[in-house]
Amino acid sequence: MSPADRKTRRRRRRTQTAVRWAIRLALAAVVFGAGVALGEALHDNPKAGGTITYVHTFPPGSTP
Image 1 (tube, helix red, strand yellow):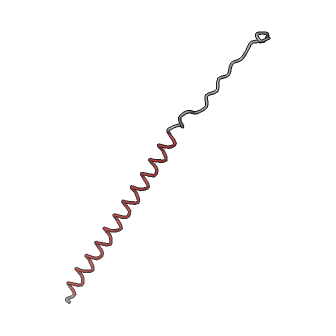
Image 2: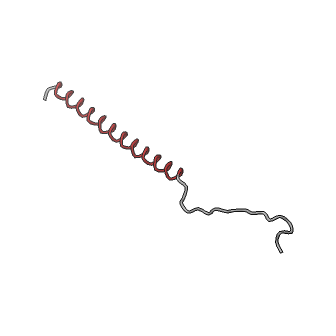
Image 3: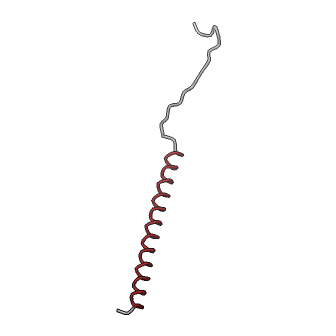
């Protein structure tokens, strides 16, 4: 095996490793973004059927 072949193999291996790490980083960014989006969606939407309180003040002498 000539030194040029070794260099080519080393360069190819280095490129493949860099591509794998780039894919992993991109996947992590997508998962993180999806988590943030889900958290914001859950935070922004109030729960349905919440309690509503009405306050009514009776003037003095109006109740027996």
